[in-house]
Length: 538
Image (cartoon, rainbow, N blue to C red; front, top):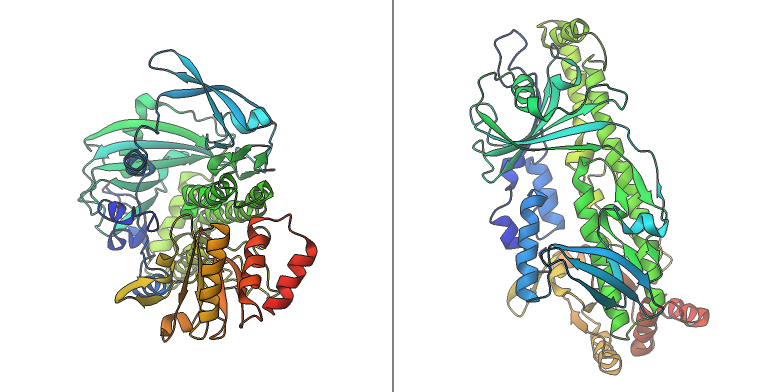
């Protein structure tokens, strides 16, 4: 969002870090029983140490904003930047590949008229509803693991949910089955305790006979919160199942799948929407390069080679983080399907002022802190790398990754995200990531890398490729992460991932850079050219 100038628009309305600092486990929000209104545990996910880690590795802190409010920001920006090009209330009726691209039949639902759109490529961002199934692209992995009912409602819960808490997990030991527990999430537009809208998620086993009953949803919400007199209005109710699936492939001729068309998994860790944005970030600069004649169509095959492994990893991580909540319940002695009396006894033991109670609370705290795999997944969010695709490997080995997904290790190894470092450019403090403008390559050279800068200018003139070159010297932040000598260079792709690097100066910098760009943009380049590049970069 920062690279496209949308970060400030989101910060103006999204959740600030201090408002999603804590995740709380509670027995209930109300009620008068001995086990009511009890805090089980408060997990700080935005503590001082974690925020310092985020600030070290990125120029931008994270925010939280519901998709239903985020999309209008995207729409407004798109309509401003491409007036008249964004069309809603249209339906893709049919399409066919013509050999020169895609011929699509579109229905204007307002007028009932149909028209034809011809394009070189088509991107299927349809949630996997239409295009993937018609192409016969299978989604691989388990489905229907858990049934979820989500209720979006308005209510004043300011007396019950603190300012710093984004998610409240309610575990009522004396309620009616699955409806007795749920996850309550702030939806804004205010992000302190005065949030006006909320979503509560109820989870059921696939074989649970309980069905969605929208007419009684308000009473269900009051029951799980134990607030029988709560004034609320149910806005909408959704129903979905927990799947963990990814597409077997992401390209069929001129058609590419992105987002939920490629990967569907539990919402834990927030990897779905973020992963979809990363998909398009990866794909669209490549399509642009092909349409400009700067790259072979074969470059587009690198989209699947790069993004599918990330999709698989994200699916597995999200599912693991989701299942970990069951481990937390079991640490407390709460068993799914157990009689309320048994779970009530377990909850009483948890709060008991005894040596055993203290032991249960201590070990439950240890288990709950493992949920940082969801709430402090810094390395999962920005530490993913592309091992194969539109990169020129330099033979280096990737560093081991943190098994909890928190500690991100910055590196300029090809395939990885360009490390963030604060630098001064013509008197202005900026991030190395800010050097990468949409649609452009960037070459970053060391203090003794002027020959690289001159070579980049020559190659840009020859090829017409947008290629900016800079030398960074005397900047401690960059020196700590650059991993190249002062006469080395790093080539950054338009999606901010490293495409190639030279540890030291090459004998012929211009030719070496030409070969690097050819290896990235034209994968059909000869094996001899690739071998020559590797030798020159060593």
